[in-house]
Length: 112
Image (tube, rainbow, N blue to C red; front, side, top):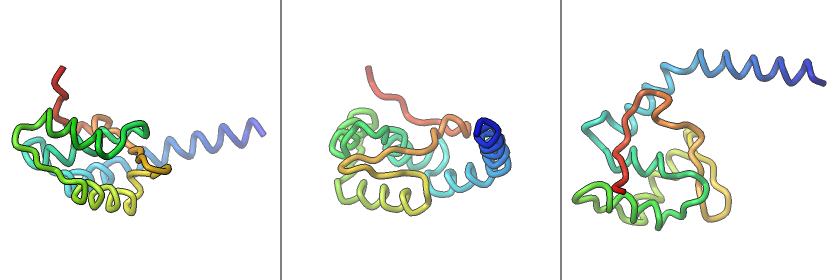
């Protein structure tokens, strides 16, 4: 059993390494660069499995001047990210499966 787990862990490492560039490109295509779509990048990163979509919207509005994300917009984004395999839902909350920082993609900071 231990050998199987170790083999699966190694396979996961190689799968991640082999898909890094294509996943990063997909994120940049969908979420924009550092200067475009900051509200989408922050909203994605805030999906930690603990925050509600209402909380994510409130934090985005605090962090990004002029941000006008609506609940319908965020729900549409999350649905798209879920279909791409970037997010999983559990009840009323969603959790991102990747961190944008792991791909060198900057995310707006939350005010302290």
